Length: 607
Image 1 (cartoon, helix red, strand yellow):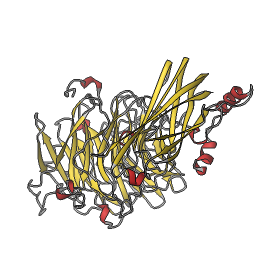
Image 2: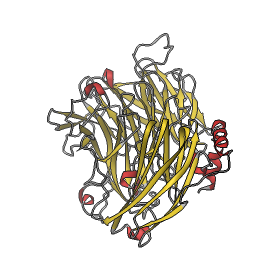
Image 3: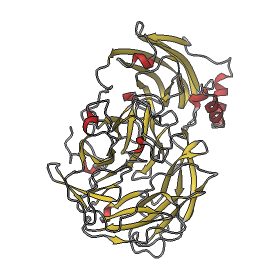
Image 4: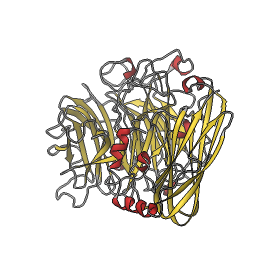
């Protein structure tokens, strides 16, 4: 167990939980798993054991699995033995570890199982996750588990009556013929990928179109017309999809988009106003279109003061009370990263001008770069950050940007590679926070109280055995529906290193039941998005072709669209020895399944 994690988590226990544990143990000492440990291997692939009874009040992501106090947690040490060390064995073979966990209780009960690897990577709380009366179960499926001693832990989230459980472990091995592919329900959303047309005409004033050079793209949709936009550097690309799903591409670059240190596109989708923003020192040159890019209107660009890096535009409904004087239905925010603080300013006239910039956090609160601002349907504004006192977190404003509070996600450990987390709120305020954890795993957590407390996180890459993630992007629709897109690689190791050999694909995890279950799909299974490292350290590193982030949105029916830069093109697609380090603007567009708005269920084919 990681001692620093143990120390950090120990302070998170609630007094209620400790009292309940004391009551449970008062009659004569703690029980323990029976047996307490076991060894699983390719020769002996099955194990079973019984966990001791546990009891506790409601834990809200308190990290009890890290320290496992008796009475609220029980531990089983599972040793995985492979014929060769994992790094060697998994070059030609693949393995799947399935942990099944079941219990029975006469009261509403939420039991969790976690698996902590020898390297400290954490899997759990299992799937499905929720409160049930009667028999309940949860499964953790881990692809290519490393060898060594794993801590498999039963924990009590909401267990009013002391409840024991039974667990089994199964290890299956097969010859590696392709990347691990889990069983995906036929009803799971599917996607088609649309790279920008390399032959579209160059816009006026340019010598080439913007199909390539699309590192850190952002995406938006005009809900009035259905037109989709993706930003590629300082080129705004327009994609119009016909009824058959064919895309017609046009480079509609704004004449005001010239010098750019960072590009951002944002759509006030409901009202058909599309913004493009180009960082230019301590402010940005910004313009918008209301006729799908045929004409552009310049704006003030930012509020003052503003920071010189990593700007983001976003907006939505006003919080109550709404300002007395406004001329646009939505509040629009411009946020940017300064040296000592991050700053947001609000526009009340549709992004034409901005009020004064307001600090949203300082260096004593958060040290990382912020991600994209999102505004909830109730007007609460959220700006996520990857490093807030050892955790990841979010700056929150409930008064239309006049004041901000930093709220951390305790179990989301700061990611040393600095990737932006992403946040989005559902129709009734459920907040979805997608991030890459310190162990490299892409995870998502939920909050029902604007980030004050957080439910248990879900490892969205576990079914594929993903060991590294980058570029988290989240979008929510109905309160119980959300999509989480990210780049993932099953190769362990330092993905910033020039000798990293991982292959990256684009994945989308979707929930239709408020995070109780998620289904993750590889939406680029035959076409890697990148080979090798993804550099996040700035400068001109060869692996910096993708820059800092991707983006995600929905259209008017809740269809999910992901904007990303494809770094592996041409010979790189089929030849592992080739690497193009490209940045080809690409849109992944949902083609089947439920959308994020239930009122449009049935609009897309079911499968």
